[in-house]
Amino acid sequence: MQNKQTSRYKAFERLYMNGMQAQATLIDSNKLFAKVARGTGKTEGVIGPRSIRVKDSMPGELSFFIHATYVALLSNIIPNLRAFYNKPVGPHGEPLLKEGEDYVIGTAQLPKHFRTPRYPVSYPKHSIVFSNGHQFQLVASDQPDSVAGRSAQHAFIEEMKHNKGQSLKSRVFPALRGASAQAKQSYLYEGITGVSDVARVDLGEDNWFNDYENHVDKELIDEIATVSEHVNHAQVRLTEAQSHLKDESNPAKLVRLQETIRKNQHVLKMWEPTLRDMRKASTYFITASTFANKDVLGTKYFQTQREVLSDDEFLSSICNIERDKVVDMFFCGYDSDIHAFDDSYKYDSILSFDLKDTFNLDAQYLKHYDPTEPLKLGYDPGQFSSIVVAQEKRRPKELRTLKNFYCWPPEDQADLARRIYEFFGPHQKNKRIDLYYDRAGNKRKEELEKITTDAKIMKRELESYGFKVVLKNERQKTIFYYQHYRLLKILLSENLRHTPRIRVCKHECKELNSAINRTAVKRVEGKLEMDKSSELLPFYLQPALSSQIPSALTYLIYGLYAEEYLPSEFNQLPDDLPDNIVV
Image 1 (cartoon, rainbow, N blue to C red):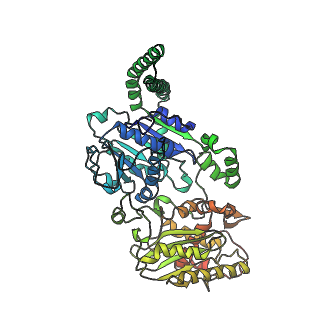
Image 2: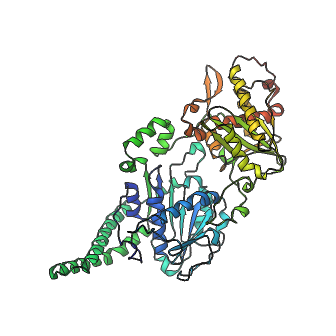
Image 3: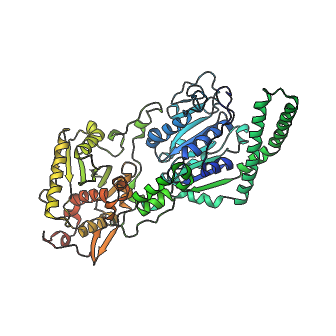
């Protein structure tokens, strides 16, 4: 990497890149999409280096840094980018970019040596400004109006699968326009850099970026690769010759070094404009599995992953293979586009934070949270314990699931209760909690007694924080799978105007939303059941993939609405019914 302060950094540094990272750097197209699996180095190999090339090639201009939410940008994406910039690369541990000298973050006060950006820094709390005047503005795709009236020259998109493609294409991408004459010469002008692992459509994620694979001109990409490699070699030879020239005293060697410099300067003068023009017209789409980083990760890593991951998870997370949605879902009729909401946050409050602050999300920032209303909790106890927290709205009649929590050994009810208090407690004026838990018909008497005991422990732990907890299932009859299934079918279909609408927060209940889409119906000898085979997965995979958290939601929904909305023939059944029946 070249840098103006050559005393601090090497002009070029030899470093390792995996195949995916090398491709991204070699091609460096105007629009670059990397659909790559976990452990491949998306920030280190794509976003980080590319952000430096963008800011260097368009001084004084503006780029958007995009994620689905500001919460993710503030708490995850920007801290990772800062860590990349702060990586020690100099001979004495100097950072790649020095904060306060090469860039500033979250402030309107620019150092005197900084060039003035061509655009005013409209959102200084949520901007990164570099010494050459280029600025990065944070943009949340769930708030596309944040780009209204702004023109940017490049867009970086983190975790593309979590962004709504239609919103980006209709509201954000059209804002990539307008620049100085100098910036328009850059091959990265009006460009896009997007990274993501594979979108799991079965979990409600958006694979909009796959469309760009059809935009790739393979012949052009091959030409870029050839010329880029030629130019790169010339740059290296030129730099090495120039560094040796000042220390060389042998006349014959001096002549050879000068000839090397002249020759490679000629190569760069001839080919760099051609390479720039080709890159400017190109789109490149990279697909890579975790095996692209096998030399660093080692074979043991893949052996371990194969042992602990399910087939679905291994194929998607490691092999980067897209999976289809479960066809026969227990939550029949559930549609993430309808039943999952993404207008989750009070952005007026969140935007008061700047990038230098430590941001901790809690209930006060949730748009649909009402501290004066009681909390409704669905609880699925066990070794893997899960809780969903919801509130009812009267007009329109809705059940809004606001947050999910979970734990596994050595954590227990005390840990769950503490997390619920830390998130909701300081803001909750109405201290009442209605707790709904399992009364499933496939449980033995001993199991039901243990569930009741767990519920009472949870009640005790929550009440230690000042909540007033009401156990809603103490005298409730046994509930069977087909009753849950039938009630969900009635409510999720939304065919009746008077039924409550079930809504799940896409961001704060992402594990619930994911697992709902993976929870299938199982029919054994004509009997309807929830497929609970996913509960055999390792604990750390269960939140997003198993039926555990969805089960907690079924207990809550049934406890609230079965009596009013489930037809009487499904409710008036004896407690000792031997097994499930077909609906």
